[in-house]
Image 1: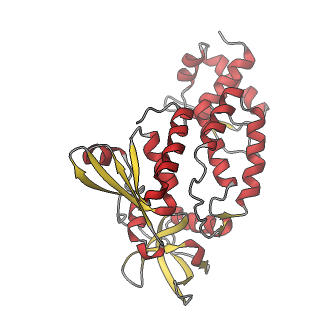
Image 2: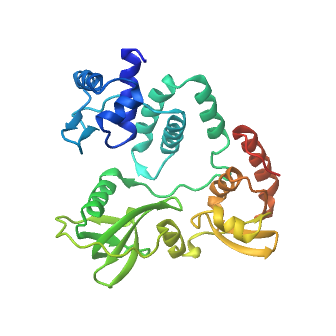
Image 3: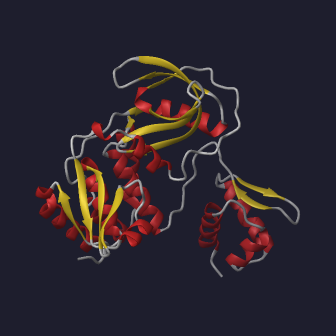
Length: 324
């Protein structure tokens, strides 16, 4: 049986992992009685964790939101994922002012990371930095993203001023569906009431004009993979060049494992296929195909092939992925 301190940490980890637990299920996991679980729950409440309890056969325990953020327990994979996400934010995630906040949070996390996890984070970060000096997209204010997110969540009509590519401004009223971050920009996918069709809007060109509402009944989305839907709708004229990678894998195997948001696939023969993407996204595409274990070579721009292969080899060694 775990001692009290270790048991409390284990109980907290279980409550953070699932939305709701029955008292009996928690008791079985911890190897104690339901009465001990009730006492441990009371101890967590004394420490500031808002644990809600509902009585009856269908009841159970649930960790709620409190006035202040309590400490979180992360497993190894979760800690690495959070650290990498924070480093991405610190490098510029398209949200205005997020860099400084990400750096502060990352410093706190790296201070307590075990050495084995710190080495993993450093290896991944070293070999997944933008390899081609990729351009950064325009930033958007966090308050605007929050306002749009709330409208999507609450199914409220959204009114905003929108600047087109020529700088001309017009008014739109839409049924917002989702926010998508792709091609280094934020986009809003919404049903445009004035045009009776689905439209994609660049968030950096949106100026919300509240009040919003009333509520609407959500429609069937225009595609299952909204990232791919948005990418297809972005004019290729926006980019100066395109990148083409030859994958040494059959088309059906590549299509089953590579997200359409990474690029478009085209068969070459029974043993290989082409993957096309925006040139400034080549770094992200390379990381994607390397982690999936594909062997490849850059066809366009061909001058980058040797450089990319060297970086890919270092990435494979760092994360323990095999490849040719």
